[in-house]
Length: 315
View 1: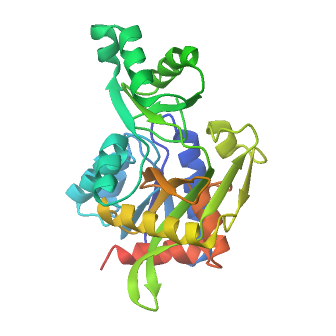
View 2: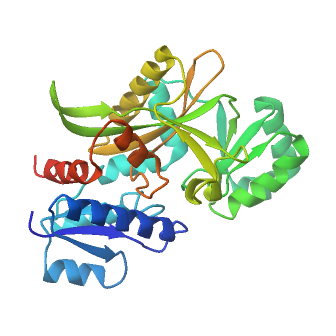
């Protein structure tokens, strides 16, 4: 690999986070001896790739286009190998209700939920629909866009009067809201990477990262402002729960047809039950991101891991 492109930026709400992830991956790969060129996902990208085709691309694009499979479709049209899930798998994981249905079919627990486009509230009457949601799902609830990341537009609803405002905030970031029963417990993330191990090359679950945000909600600020969240790796959960969480992340990775790397967000309830929340096909790589924390906890080197994932593109 004499010429690798790290692709970041783009025009999603998560552009700045993506750029930070891109810088981190670029530095890590250079430290591992890989020749890297960082590129933004802008109007000049395709011309640059066509003029000087890279050996492979490492996408660290967050949000739409980066995680919905579109950029990866374009890379496949150009015949350029890349790290991460293929387009169809990205689309399934990017749409949270679809991902929940697929992992539920694979045997995972996931909170009861309903996905409603904003047109439903306009056409049928917001107050009537919200009353039905409250009757069916109860309180508390968690509201978030059905597509998107970094907890943008997400909110916990503990009282009925808070639901309307939560829906308005959600629709600022997407046209469909996913409304879930809120599960109280320990919030963790389990990253999966496909690396060589004792049994050959295959998906491996890294140590779970426990997330303890200062304000109680792991929102955008808590995710990316240093000091806003406390992390524990490995997570402070019973051994049986840690094993179940690792198995859940591996199941989600395989059920959704992902490859190379992913990160699954889970809740461990008070009796050790594991609940699937969502999966990320382009995990953050910033200084406060969860996958690099798990990599360090597993005594792995981020640069060498990223290099190995690039090599997987050619298998």
